Length: 421
Ligand code: ZN
Image (tube, rainbow, N blue to C red):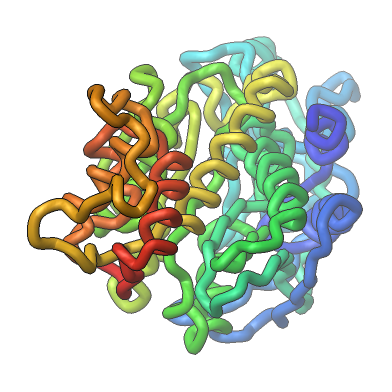
């Protein structure tokens, strides 16, 4: 996974352009992706696909002719979507176009000017403070042309027409946790779910530029979105922090409860409520769509020192953390997939399990994690209001054991599957 992260990290990604295409081409080596191109000027919901931005060279030379900043060293040095420029100007006129992080003097910030025509450079504050008076030469060889916005889509079908949606943004240049980590984890999850066979839910993974990419996908799939049972944006999943799951706007959909079940075992993990800021869960949870999409993170959006700076580099993420993130996502998805809502067909008193060969703990107390005990929980709570995730959360009995117990009860005619709660 770190090898893939190393390949993706240096690519000059933005909302549109060659960097996004190259990124999707690399990901396509690992999972099958359907690539979509949507032309500049296309209206998508309340937005319009912007012109395509590409960049090949950019630098600033100081009054002595020395390059003080060069795109070739780090793609964060140029403000994303900068217009082409080639001019000479005094330091005082250059300064408004230079961005730094004064509180982290050795970090280069990440800045964009997507929807406002401008240009700029990002440098360390340390470097800014050494700049001498005089005339500077500024060069940005970029292009803003009619082209297209690119996104990629993976889909592994299930037995039903319902599906889980996982979403990763692909628009950030050299930033490792936000969000090379999300792309790498999503690709690995795609490989894992490709091996699933008896899954009821399909799994869709969207690799799209932030905000406008999700909006474009939603605008082109309006007739299909009611098939999405839940999902997550995958962001900041390679750092050394425990997990944070941000709930959907509903707060109690199967994705929310599956995440609580999987992540709640470790008290270091955090479950937080929805708020309309952060990543593309904002678009999915908007009132016109109301898709139950949460967000899985380690460090939270905007809440860590390295966020949107050159310090969010490959040293900030770790292969073991990425791998544990893949396990967590897979576990949450399979829990959603295996979740069922049953009704107890013998609800008056307990049915006689022993007569059916279902009660093993004859003459002694059922062990807390035993199959028999799981059956008693399922029979008690299968009143049409509690699904298997609810029962696992309340009983503390593992979800796999619940699935096994429910299957035995169903085979003995004691349970029937009903719709959703
Ligand atoms: Zn970001």
